[in-house]
Length: 613
Image (cartoon, rainbow, N blue to C red):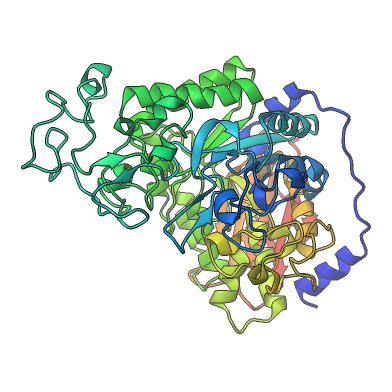
């Protein structure tokens, strides 16, 4: 019997677990939890649940190019909002999530893009007003209600914030609106000359952007050193706070190539890149986001495009946010930055915890290791490379323990999509087995597991970005609704809040196991077995108080295996938490496990007894 068949049969016999919603969990109890104690659920509000159809157009009048609302188009607003999230908190909690990473909810430019290529700011990354909730999602009062409701259930809320850029408002005289504008670097276009080295003198005495003093930046008064920026008349006051409307607070050097100097100074597809070197910007951003902590008492920030902001900014911003959180009684405020990378090379991520002083980053190396081994054919030694890199982070393994881990997301695509592309001839059963295995790795290995909304319902997108942002409520998008989901015969044309999908059941089971065992949340990791080919990956994790061992084993191959695995000599008897475990060690320091194809097991050793005196 395959692991998929066995799991389906087992889960089919289970009654849905009754909702257990406490009247109110003391907020001190919520805030006492460390970041590594959480299971995070990531949600884009627009694509989750429509709790109030009255705000679907954001209070705007007109067609979709004015309001941004078109529930039939993948690149426009669909109607999800904060009231919808409140409505579905029970569902999220039943999945086992203890924290919600909320996609950006700031007021966005409703629509932007060249004629014929327009799309909407439904995703939240095109901010115009940093002080209020986008009317498509509700109001600031709705945000207060959402955070309070989550806290009452013992759940944390992490906000997704953006500092690198705003919406595309600033234009350049030298470039057509909506068209690419090549990056112009500081060597060929220095700050003290207009439009290049041969231009007239401007910004006299400005010593460059690496002299980050107010006195120096007071000499930067003319933004025409590379291009001639301007703000269309209709948008001259669209940004809030008002200082963000002045082009002097932006780099104005054209589009980024994501390399070298342009990585921190170029515009993302025209998005206005903020000059975070300027002390006025630093103090302004500290006040903006400190205010969100003051007003809403959120529990952490996920920072978008963190690698594209100069490190010196983070060196001031992070301590200020942690201080602000402490003043609000939030001692374990979790800050993690997005450092997008697509190789198993932890050093790329770790440098941003050392140089930028970011407390944590999203663990793209973890995601890549799972993709290459479970949605690929690389050996399980990929995880050795991953875990060996833990010492590189600012606080070594302590930092690695709080890195949010994930297997897919709204930008790169869903894990199931990677599996289907890598193994186009695989049966649905095999695809499901591989996804179940990836979830087991996510929910048992070190880091903070992050579930992308819809993964628990078997969503299989057509690709990345807009193709991986399906609706949880009944969708009207044809290219979403024709997708063949995993673990179910339904489609996204009907709402996806059921609790019977084997993926939902598995995640809920593993989440409960994880939070019940400190070894899986706070325990150190010892690599026990890995291979240069698909096959066994085994690790032990240890209770930080008792030292009791939990052995976790995965089989990434399409064939069953039986293998002896090293354990502590004091680990002689084992309890099965999931899968199939040997009840006792075969010899001191060794236990034999049998795993089906793409199977896994979690085996808890009884605490070793001390010798009698």
